[in-house]
Length: 118
Image (cartoon, rainbow, N blue to C red; front, side, top):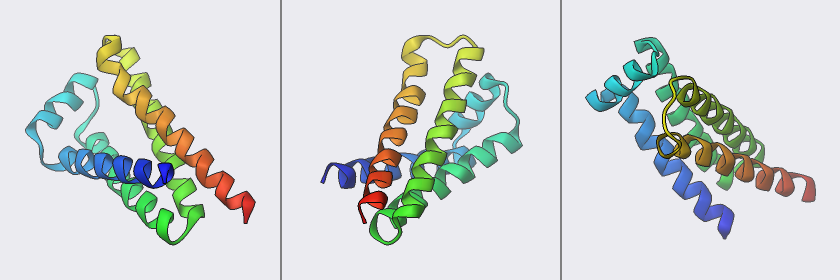
């Protein structure tokens, strides 16, 4: 039940944040502030939407895919946290990326536990 709630929360969050990377002027400005290019913004958005879909699909149909998606999102958010540290954002500004990196790492562990119990 906890895994289901986390997968839903993470999937919805990343799906809409990823779409924002393509369509939101606010996101365009944020990526400029991060010192990242238009291409990097689009790649980030693509992987966030892909990760959200993979996490949802993986939960219901393929735990290996769910594990991979959660681990990939954890890496993506760890890189995002690194960017925030590099540009010297405050802890409050940086915390969401760290939180989602750790949350996705926990979810990937939960998927791993499912896989080895089968």
